[in-house]
Image (cartoon, rainbow, N blue to C red; front, side):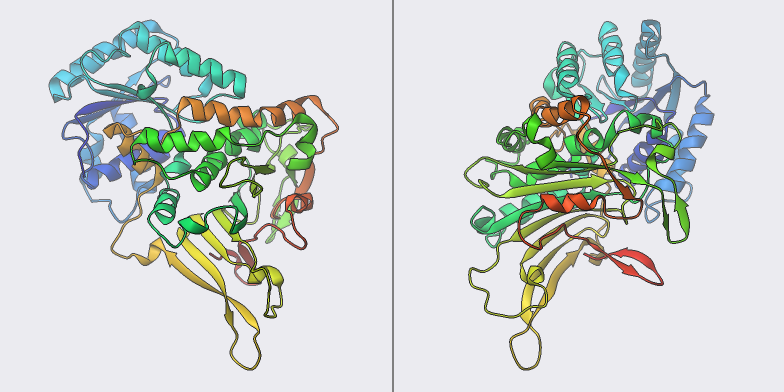
Length: 508
């Protein structure tokens, strides 16, 4: 594995939860695995007044609590955090950025990291341009003495207009190859394995088209509600929070043509072509192709769960969707006429993300099956949890006759006892340090995704007659979502079984 060049990582918003729970624990994992630069420093900045030692203590607690327990080394955590510094800063203050520039120069001189800097904005999106502008105002965006890369968290924009404005503002400061828009779903091992499954196997690629595939279904379900993020979520909703980035990106990887090479732009060019081929959904057709829902109060396994409108920070009359299902088509030679279905929601029965390829039935079905749907071949790519791949196909039941039984051929990453599965942030942070933008979103793909969703957002904002369906917390969303699926007696796949004693579990 190639080691990254020496560099300093600066985290804006470092006193927040993302740094504590994700960023520093994953960087520690990279340290243990020998994947950090030879000379490497971390500087956290935030509005909160903290000493270096207070900051280090907080980060140490996060590493112990959230890092992969298999790789934590006694005594090593304390040594790791000793190389982390904290600088109190106001993102609106140019004077504080002058202070940051001086601080960076001093640290780089002592540690020998050179001028390379990676900036991570773990901040609210509304101050992205403020921070970028202040970095530029003191010369920290210039690449005269080393690289300057900037990682932006989602959401990248609020709609098509704001996305274009944000891209335009950032491009006045940074070149596109300096900008890294993170989507942690793309860092998941099974998502990346989708490319290998498709393009390294002569078994699948010849079947990966409209001739053999009936429809494709992508699900990202969460069992939790909005927790303490009601204020943020009520201004975002499931469409902005999940569909524009995670689900459309997974659809892009599923539907893309083989890239000419594995370099970042070759792969991202093919994803862009998919987004450009999305059949537009007209405002007047939104009710036909999109279902939105909002969870209501329910009792789940003895626990009383509140309705979304009862959550702290949520408007009691809110029409923000906590569930959305979309049906769409990709107008190109490979996928013409094949429906794609994507859904996401909060307070569903379990946490699960998967891509399901539904193959067409045989033209003449000779054998009896209790459920005709179970006789259809499926390829299930499980992103989380219990990452793996499963192929469903029919086998004859023992005994007289030709009764068909569905059987599974599966692979689980957990079966590889000698191989550790890296987390999404671990992989993405490593890639950014190396300058590999393959798994980061490019400006044109983000804008094209927003363009596809723009009529849906407009219709919801301007047409009060479009319904938002209630669904009890702990269920699979509004029953009306099944109306999207084409075909008699065909519904969404429900990957969980209900057990009287053990509650819910997910079956791949």
